[in-house]
Structures are given as C-alpha cells and as structure tokens.
Amino acid sequence: MNSDLIEFVEVSFGSVWSVELLLLLYRDPQRAWTSEGLIRELRSSEVLVARSVERLVAAGLVLAETDGTVRYGPASAQQNDLVAQLEEEYRKTPAAIRRLILQSPVEKLRTFADAFKLKKS
Image 1 (cartoon, rainbow, N blue to C red):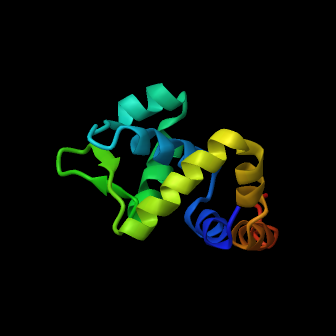
Image 2 (cartoon, rainbow, N blue to C red; image 1 turned 90 degrees about the vertical axis):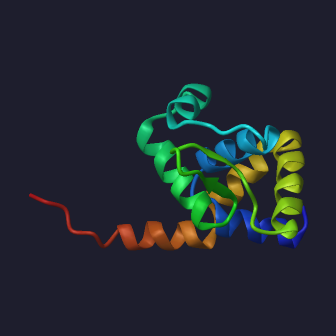
C-alpha cells in the first residue's frame, strides 16, 4: 500500500462504515442514493449513515443533491484515483484498511481526548 493511500485513509475516514458507504457509491457513480436506501443496503443505522455522509461530503468525496440524495462525486481526479486504489486494496485486504482506520493518528487523538470527558453522575 502506498503512502498516499495510507494518508488518504487515515485522514478521510472515521469509521469502516464510511469506507463501505463510499465504495458503494463509487461502484455505481451515476446512482443517487436516499438515506433509506443506504441504511438498507449497508444494514446500518440512520445515525451512522448520516455521520458517514456528512464526513464524506466535507472531504469532497460525495455530493449531496438538493433532493436529499447523495452520490459519488470526488472533487478531483487525484481523489478519484485514491478511491480506485482504496477499492482495490479493500477488496484484497479489508483487514489492512480497517487497521489503518482504527490505528490512525486522528482516531488515537480522538480516543485520548475522550478519556478526559467528564461523565455525568
């Protein structure tokens, strides 16, 4: 796996759900998906799908249409190339991609910060 792909995965994805959602959209780029369709196809929850879509839109990988649907829409050719590499790598070695997400510096920082959150009594 090349360093550009590693950095792309670590920075762009907060969860494996986001990868699954992006690759679903990537495989059929002309299709506009509703939230309900994504929930059903991914067997996920509304919250997880909404968070994943929000993150992917912010990353410039997914387009949110005015009718509430979303579709694959990378902001650059470089992003499209990275998604193509991700799709190939995820098909061959999904565990390696999952490890990158779970062990990313961003995720480690989030986990560290969460340790200092005060719990309600």
